[in-house]
Length: 484
Image 1 (cartoon, rainbow, N blue to C red):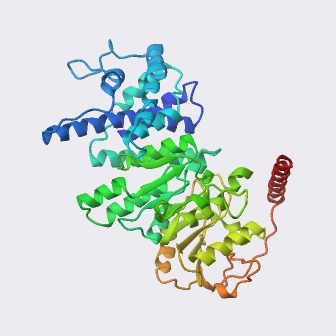
Image 2 (tube, helix red, strand yellow):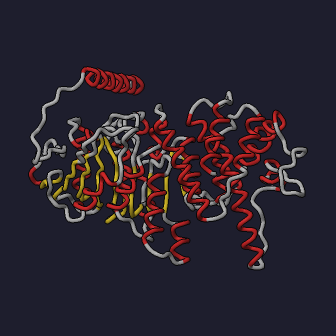
Image 3 (cartoon, rainbow, N blue to C red):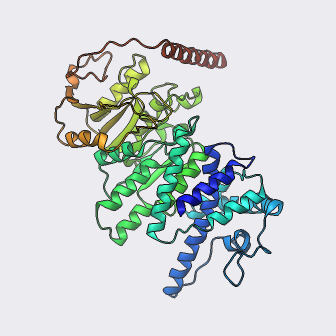
């Protein structure tokens, strides 16, 4: 039933003039879903308070509650069409009254980790794009059929929402940056193996896939005590996200997976000066897939000791700094990081292996990320002692990955198994750091069990790289002009 409801909602949004892409469908579904979730949450809390003889104060004022503006009901429990707003009346209420009211929650909230703050943040960051009040009425009626009361309902809803995020990623354009394949995330979480009581962090949270899968991993790890369940709810998962849409999707995704007030902050992680990070700000575990290919401005680069325009390289510096001593990380990054010969790449590789034990490198084939032909690796490291030996695993598959044949957990089962003992195989080997060239610090993947295949790059790839280098040169020249 839920699946058909989501499909019907997409069909309505598809015909609305204000929604033009899969990204819009997810965003607009999310804010209405959130308000329905909030209504169910308040009902559950009120019922629990009454059972224990306590009073309960609702968060939302009466006129803005779901049952008043969205689905007023008659005595028969069905929608009262005489009271239910529709058309321009509904659109005007949502745009001119509901959203301004909900925005104010941010300023009035006690702290950023409250549900009140999340309400204010979400409704400060988006707007209602559904132009037809009649379409909006249809969507509200469909979402009203959904329930968030039982664990089973939330579980089914979370799977469907993940499906919507995946569709958004597969739709191309900038949707893919919000979606890291879940089989890969689950594998990274397994290898890093967080424990209850760890503080887990993703500074490039996107749709919060890493935090959600870490939550699933920990809840399945044992039968939780009440205290452990509360620890997972309030003191375990932390994220930061720069983009408004990703922030909203991440919040909603975590809520649907069972975390009531996610600790995700809407901010540019890279705007934080590394020198300002103190011990109290650090985390036990970092799980992340920072955006690759992005370029950061000169003023952002000033926050980092190793200056580079490459977003992912700045994030890696941030992750190393924000880990506690003994902290563990699993980070996805472009494979060129291991071999680039520019000063920033060499300096960053040296910093990584001198300050952390880079114990494992997972080399992934192209096509893992929908819509991006970029080859990536996963770096697994622990902070506090230098790297002596790196274990490499090269994922070699008998098929080309893509939308039709995506990555599966089964594809990565051999890696997970061999990684436990860092065993050698046709696809895995170890390298002593003492053997690398100290000047270049080249850590690139060179499988000793396979003959090196010499492959000429395609002309289009060479042209793309030339364009990227030209753009970077122009950016440097522009920054120099500003300084002169």
